[in-house]
Amino acid sequence: MRKRWIALIVVGAVLLLAIVGGYWAGRHLFHMPSARGVDSVIGELKGTRVLGVFAHPDDEQTVNGLFWRAKDRDGAYTAMITMTAGEAGHQTPEVARQSDLGIVRKAEALKNSFHLGVDEHEVWDYPDGGVPGVSEEELVSRVVETLKRVQPDVVVGFWPASGATGHKDHMEAGRITELAIARVAAEGGSYRGPAHLVYTISPTTALELFGGEQGKLVVANQPDPEYAMSAEVGKKHDGWRIHASQADYLQSSYGLPAWLVYALWDQEFYHVRDLAADPLTP
Image (cartoon, rainbow, N blue to C red):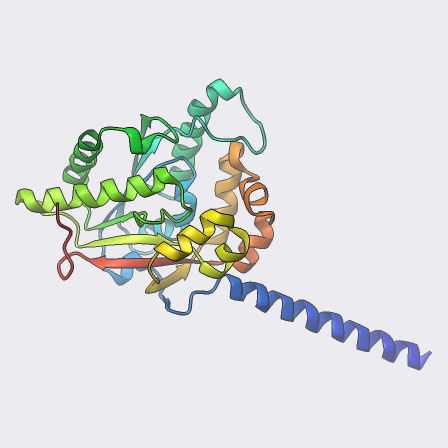
């Protein structure tokens, strides 16, 4: 009997070590060694007004932690632009008529940003999947208009060469954001644009393993992040429940359930451009 108990204890200890080892190996997939941990990126930059510029409903899921803490910890005024209603998206699971998906996803985006404490959120109606085909002048002018109205000192968006996921709408949204900031600075009015442009960065090792060809494109074309901060995992899970038409997105795209992804990926990563030291040119 005693030998049996000893054997059970040994087996249990081996299993526990295997689980712990697997957990830490999994976390390594979502670790970015160049990033320094901070409580809040916006707080670190002393931001007081923040504007996010994104392409689709649910893009704000990549920046939950930043926007939640900007409002909750730093008391910043926060705003968002979403350029499309996501009407061409694939429902996972199916929750509505496909012809109504744009209406549904716009509501999901507005509800989720409200849940994050965002003060205002514009959802535009450019074609989902067709942002690169929209007039550059029209898009830049609209972002400029919002910049001048909100007057953010920090803008958050996508790195143009990678778009965090390799999506062409994301990449174009990032390019348009840079052009709009450069135009505001060049015009020389009372508001000269933000002090910092913050790019959301995806964890490279995980993308290399699970992201397919698009993941490899992102890894090859995004910069290393300087900052890591809490992803506010609870808000991530809340967000996918709110984005009901996309609730199983992580499982369908990467083969991993959301609970496992966020057990391992509990940080957001950011690359910051200081626009005084490194200005954008029109």
